[in-house]
Image 1: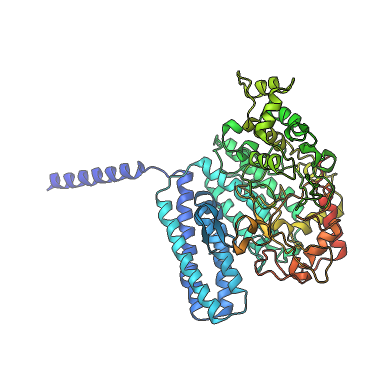
Image 2 (image 1 turned 180 degrees about the vertical axis):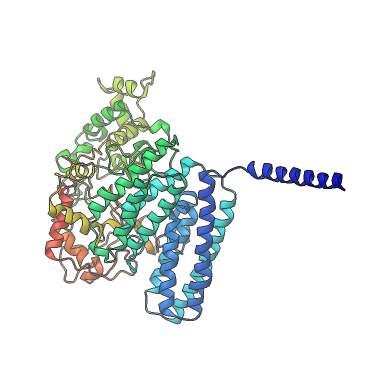
Length: 597
């Protein structure tokens, strides 16, 4: 009996020891694994809000509950926006993409928009049986897309470097889009939603044992956003420099402390950029096709010589610099460019070439996909340079200086000048025209003496009440959207042929429609950069406005719709901005700080 008792006790001890051993050898989850688990949990919560609260409210036709549950679901999405945008970019466009048709030109395919922004338009419109049926359909598509994320995420194995890159880009996204009202133009919930996005970033950092200072800085920013429920009241320039950039610096310090390397990012920013406004934040080589097109000092110098040479035109009487004057930020000061061969003026205004390399489409109608293609088109255009790159190559091969310059630049022992080399050298020079040397740049880089109160107020209006920043995305202030900079956008503004507000007409230039006759493209023109804008008057694709005051008045009225031009496809909001004269002058004061010094 005693022996059996001893044996039983011994067996129990062995069992306990074995269980403890198994328990103690269970692998502790890494921070990256914890982030993934947390994301799954937050995604499940979002699905629950959509499935149970939003869907129920729509079925009950409870308008108050519809809005409340919609805003709740949007806020929940923002908490995991960093993750979905980074790991599931295609699906993120279906969940929270812009409410405009996406046209795939190569496939002749039109994809109708779906997601939260489409829902917002339906919810805040006057309720009708038709739009509530459409809203119900949107919720069904949302459910499908969220389930897709769940399935895909099961297969993902994420790294620390990817997570830190994702939250780095999310802070940039908040900077450029989140506080401008970009994806909530009707509900105007961008500030509390930006707070929700920062909450998601904070939750990630807790898994990496972020210090109290960093967590407190995020909490301060969240509180500030939540205390500014009035969309127009936030001092955005101080919020960016004093809060968001502080958070970015803290994230970068933590990454380095943990010896986590940067990863190859999908953004056109340098992988280690801590601020979009820092000097050399952009990697220009990410805007070209492959390594053979990377910039070099030799290519830039050769391109500059070609840019100023008349050898590219068959008549030997025109160069690129004939229409793009350095003193005017490489514009020409004319309403539309001067033409050749009996054409006194061309169809469109000559745009600045500064920062042209930091975009994904060229010409006002986006007909060229690269700067090399743009150079080809301009040289061969009958009324622009009336040239031929093949003939130009022959002339350059017979020149005294150019053959050796091409040989040194392209390391080509044959000294053979080709059309492609000419195009590429010109494109390289244009890509170099992005100095980021304005008063605004210096201010954002830490010199707080650069901007006066009027100029800072102008930035706040530009990014807030004026809604300029929701199309001219900081820090480039063109239509290439932050923080990835992978696509350049065009807008339908309803620009008139003459600078008047009586009997205004849109003119005969149909923009992108002339190349691709989709109704959505009628009167659509590329959103150009506002950098150096004070030097590049007159304005708009047709040069209709001589002053920035006229431009601001046009936008303040609601674009073409505000002056009597009715376009069903106008993408600019037709609602008047209600800016005072003083506020418009403040915006202009800010715009002038974008001139390179």
